[in-house]
Structures are given as structure tokens and as C-alpha cells.
Image (cartoon, rainbow, N blue to C red):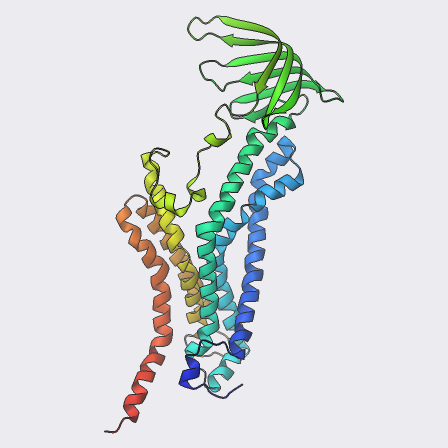
Length: 386
């Protein structure tokens, strides 16, 4: 390892052995920390879907496939925070092991020591952009579609004997027994899909079939009972064979898309024919949030870097700077959420979202590197002849 770097090598884009050494520690810690937190959050959030397994008998494979589609959204949220934690931890450890002291004694400038952290912050920011703009909307859209199919289609095949099963928001099915051949006995269907024509259907037997990729039940020897809203009379229609569609009456494509699953172009220019006007501001804010929030990874990393490299070395350690850096990140995150809430009411406050995401990182960079830049400018002046 050379004792000191000339100015041309300090500005070189090639990574030195020391850069690769520190960067490898940063990236390995970032992957391990982000992965562990994502799995922990996934296990916690998966508890909300246990009812689909317990109540509707979904297999473990379907449960894992459904909930794993939420992992990219978890990573997009925690990656800026884990970037701060990793930069803070690695550089604090390098300081406690006297490695930073050795680097300074070898002639490395603050910028050279901070370059691995800058590269790690740039990688995290780029990954956040990819997650926010492409991966998360696609995975969340697949999650919503899969969940819709489970609740409105697959649930029809998971009807249990002797249990009132709600196969959709407006339909409940009850069967008394099911024989070895799959034939259903003692069927009752409460069909409320048409508010003006709510009906109760009774049948002696029936069977579940798939017609045009839609689950349906074929009923035999039954009756349809419906109350006329105008006259209040009970109308009873007997049938020898009847087929009922157990899915939503609006079909699988009538699901209202969520703002989190829409592409950026539709968020910034929402179609008011498809959404209500009150959702317009919400979608616009979501679009600008996707563009601004990745820079929080850069700012969080710079806060951690300033905490580790700013100030003098203490033999007994210094807990004040890490605590102050953590409080600064918490305050920055809280301020970001507050600005997003205010901007959803007044769109003229959208530029403040960019200020909250970028300015803290730029301030930390100025505090770290401005003295070095000033000394470099002053050195040629001191060497110039009077």
C-alpha cells in the first residue's frame, strides 16, 4: 500500500485495494442486514394472511407465493435505513480498530476514506430507484391480482362441510356434506350480488366445475327464493338443474387498482375517468415520492459517514455522535412523512419533498469535504511567488 496518494490518483475513478476492502465490508453488511430485516418484516406481515390458510385451507406453497410478492416493497422501505446503519457501523468499527487512524497517517484525505461509503450510497440509491419505479409496482400488482383470485375464485373450491363459507364479499355458501366422489349434498347459497334481487338458493345436490376458467357450482333439484322489493311477495322458482357462478358478478378485471401498483406515468397523469377526483392528489404525491425517496438512502449514508469521520478520535469511544446521527435520521424520516402529508393537501409543497430527501446529504458532504477543498485551493496560493 503506498504511503500517500498524489492528487491525480486521489481523483482517479479506479478503486484501490483499500477501497475494495472497505466497499466489500459495506456491501456484505448491507445485503445481510437488509435481507434479515426484510425476512423479519415478511414474517410479521404474513400473520395478516394466516386466516387464508386457516379459514380457507390454502396450501403452504400458495401462502408463500402470495406473501413473497410483498418482499420488494419491504426492501424499498428499509434499504435507506440499513444503508445508514451499515455505513455507521462499518466506519465506527474501522475507527475503533484504529484502521482510520492508520489511513490518515498514510496520507489519505477524508474524501479517499469516504469514497467506499459514497459508492455504497450510490448503489443503494440506484437500487431504490429500480425498486420504486419498476420492481415494486409490478410485484404489488401481481400480489393484488393473486390475492383477488384467492378470495374470489380459489375460495370457491375450499368450501368446508358444515361451515358457512364466504366465497366473496356478497356471497355465502353452506354445504351439509361431501361424498367421496366430490358430490355436494344439502346446499344453500346466499346470493347478494344484485342488491335489488337478493336470493337464497337451496339444492339437494351439486358439484363444483370449471367453465371458461371460472369456478361454478352445478345444482340439482333445488329452488330459488327471492323477495320482490315492490310487492314484498316471496317468489319461489323450482329447478331440476341450475348453474351458479361463484365469482364476483363484475368479473376479475373490475378490481380497482391501487396507487402502489400503478406505473409512474399514470400516477403523475392520473385518468380521472377511472378514479375519483379526490384520489388525484394522492396519486400525484405517490409518483413524486417514488422519484424523491431514493435520495434518502444517499442522505442517510452521508449522516452516518459524518458521524464516523467528523470530529476527533476517542480512545474510549464516542457514543454522542452515533446517537445524534440516529436522532437526525429519525427526525429526517418524520419530517419527510410530514411533508408528504402536507403536500397531499397542497401540491405546491411538492418541492419540499426533494429538499427533505437531498439537502441533508449535501449539507453533510459540505461539512466533511469543504475544509479539504479549501486547503487544496490555499496550497497553490502559498507556493506562488510573492
